[in-house]
Image (tube, rainbow, N blue to C red; front, side):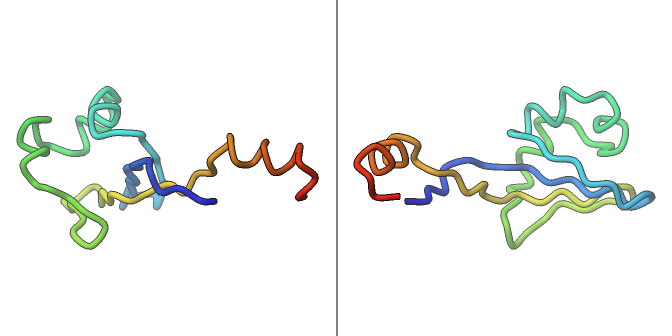
Length: 85
């Protein structure tokens, strides 16, 4: 019933250990604070090909890419209304 169909970008700020989450690399680069911390341009970052086992790291941040587990809501509601819950 779980689907792993959503990418999530997880950013850890090294100075404060704060964690930020973005739905895409483009969304991460929309944040002016992130642009300052990354110290890299969007197009250059895209060539880095980060993956769950290959994060991007510099002196300010660690950027990881992962999957967000989601539920197929159509199955959830179908089973619930059929009395399977």
